[in-house]
Length: 235
Image (cartoon, rainbow, N blue to C red):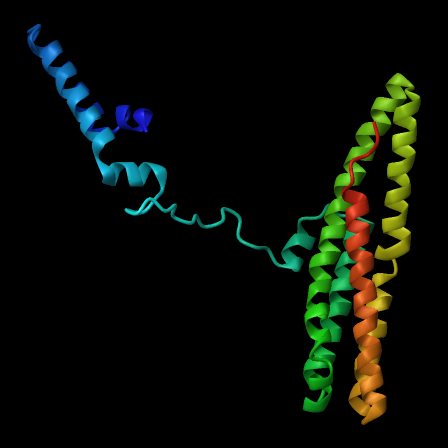
């Protein structure tokens, strides 16, 4: 608060004006007058409730004004484009394409099918976010593995070697155990949607239940893998 008052443009302008007149006239009385005026403006600013609210970002009742996020929420496609180019990014892009096909299949199905899939749809929409969480965690883990690899090569530290081996195992689990298979998993879900749309009665309900359970399992796998990749490596 005090710093903001000292740097208030009006107060600084008074100092500049006083300095200008002192240089022009060489009258010594201008110096104390300028400093006194500057101090008065600073004290008035500190006691001004409007100025306090503006500096502290609060309302007249002292409540903090919510700030807009600096980085608005990015779509899965935008997040995918920020991934480094390579095999992981290609797999994520293929998975997003497969996910879009599942959504199209749901949207093009009849009302009865959409009603049966009502519980599964929020879980389906959650898949891309979880997938990108995994992909981003995978890239961070890969960068950390590269750092550990260089450090271990220089020092030959046994603990560093174990940490590197553990991290590389996590990366293999991400690449082989999930990222490589998720496009096919999503296309299998699309097939369940199509089958549910052409069946009726108990068969359609059974397909919807299978889809819901498959989405639960997929989201759990994604969430668990993200947690594993995000866990700090042993040092």
